[in-house]
Length: 109
Image 1 (tube, rainbow, N blue to C red):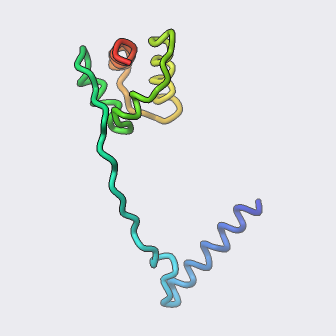
Image 2: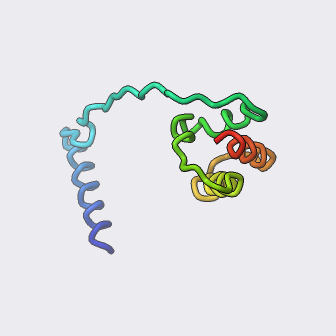
């Protein structure tokens, strides 16, 4: 057993025993509240805008997408980014939407 795993186990057991003993250590943290900043960018009108908004804004703001670095081969860049979102991050993007998203982003950003 690794040291990290053993430490986690000890902390988990201590918290569990504390709760059982009437001392809810793990339940006393105050909730964190924060304001999300207003978006300053907006998606530009174009073909398949609704597809991009429906797929991309579940995780990203239009501000974030706009901050991506300019590329010489935009279509190749956006194809790699959309593929990464699907394969690495598990984005539930329908295969029929991939080319629409890539084309919109390459033409717009």
